[in-house]
Length: 173
Image (cartoon, rainbow, N blue to C red; front, side, top):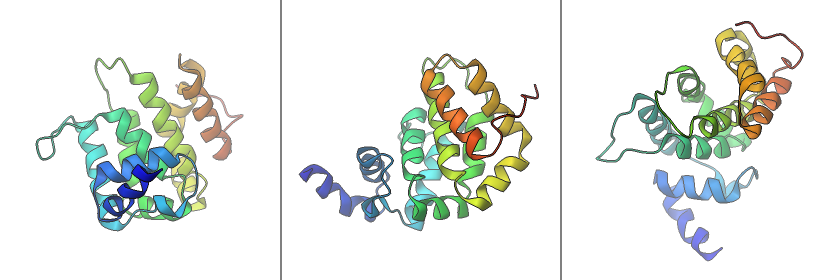
């Protein structure tokens, strides 16, 4: 735990790697130590977007599934949820879900983190309305729930759909 305590000041200072490490250790806990600030949210969303666009930031190519795992963990916190949404997290997540990825041996795991992120964000009334208005994203979740080979991805999609009150609706392909 001492290592995490030493990462906390770095995370608060805006270092995305430190914030991701702290978020991944605390996972789904709504722990105030996982709270992020505006600068860090903008940086994290830029990094997640770079993984979708397959671009390099400051000489670093970040791994898509790792960044989405961190984002899904950060989205569990109510304070983070509002800040993430205010800075366009839903658009970035939508792009990650709907963009073709080509050959990705970790696609099922990546999809699982995307669904988990949507699930966590969907606990906000405002975000839930936005997601429900996006039929393409809702259909992506429904297809993931029905067709994913990854059990965790299916469960995360089912949880997101339940939270969105879409659990019983048929898939529109």
